[in-house]
Image 1: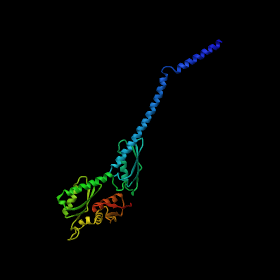
Image 2: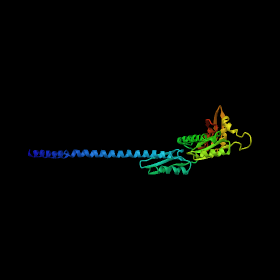
Image 3: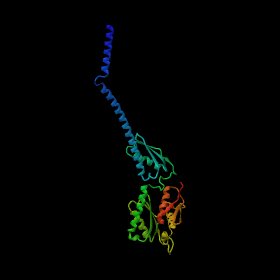
Image 4: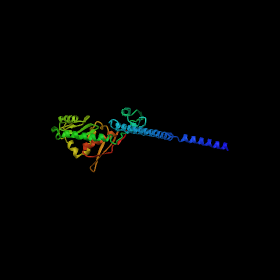
Length: 291
């Protein structure tokens, strides 16, 4: 009986010691603190991952913007991808090795870009990204530049009565039409050259009476309004960038249609601009691009 009682007391003491050890003051808060610490570490890892994703997205957008803001690259479709480690991958096709190298250099200069993996392929026959070969901004700037040059002509007394058409392609201004004298031709070129934002001027102006003869050689000027198809065809033939192509302008029901073949989308767009300005009306551009 005594032994049984002693055994029960011993078991009770052991249980009491275990209970005290497990639920002693400060033990529970320590366990909770450990759990909170693990949760905090996990949240920190998640936050860091989100931050890396954000930096990669920001770098991708910045590189895309830098490529689109470069006038030598904006016309091409260049794919951009970015990774969490700060590296950027360029993909797609460009026409020359120079363009490929330029794209890599522009991307590498963007802040927060650690490394550029250039996967661009060189394909001489690659087409421009836009159907017209110009970005929206370039197209807007060209039309604004045409208006500036025409305004400058209208404000010059010595240019009064002249018939000069102005077309701009990436700030390269082409002058076409007929003027009354060599002095007016030189003045027209000078005014265009002095107009802000004009890069170069191509002079295809004709001086009335200089090409042959006496009589009404100045007739082509009125023909611009009376025969817009003929005026457009003459302007295309006079343009040094387009003279080598067999481009034709046809008129049907008052609608002008431009046809033929060129090698690049940029040349197609230039042909449309030249024909439109010479005819002084809308021209449907059905020219086919065939590299």
